Length: 220
Image (cartoon, rainbow, N blue to C red):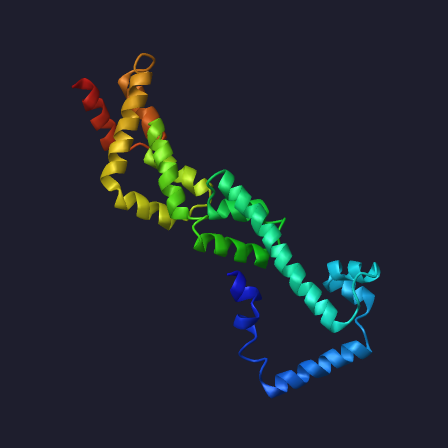
């Protein structure tokens, strides 16, 4: 992602060698040497370089401005990528969680490229996120499949990915919901009658068939 956006080889090699492009670039640089970029304009579009020019650390020439901007972009990208990487390494995050976290902190196009690079390298993977989250839910044994779906969707996981995972693990997920219903029935049976427990489970999204199966397992 980074190379596609910022690399000279990917973005410039096809047109820079063309004679008309080289002539136009040379004319532009010559004009900017003769008439340097006005500081207010530089401040608006290249604020970091503007500060360096004002401090006498950078010449207001087109070549120096271009080199400074390229180096700043690379450094800025690496700095922001490190922030995102630290965030996803601390705890597994969904793609949407990363987008929401850095939406106002990192320029939108740069954030998109950082996320794309981290996806390519496996640091952000919504399919893996689903599997890890569901394994954690299954260890608790207290959620219906409807609640599992809701929790994953609240993390910004696309519904089609959730359904693909659940459908490909259909028997395992149905057994999980039955065991989860059984766990809740055991906890509630001294406080509520059977019909009240059934209504409680239905409101939580449990399937009637899995509730009945859980009751049968307790009766055996």
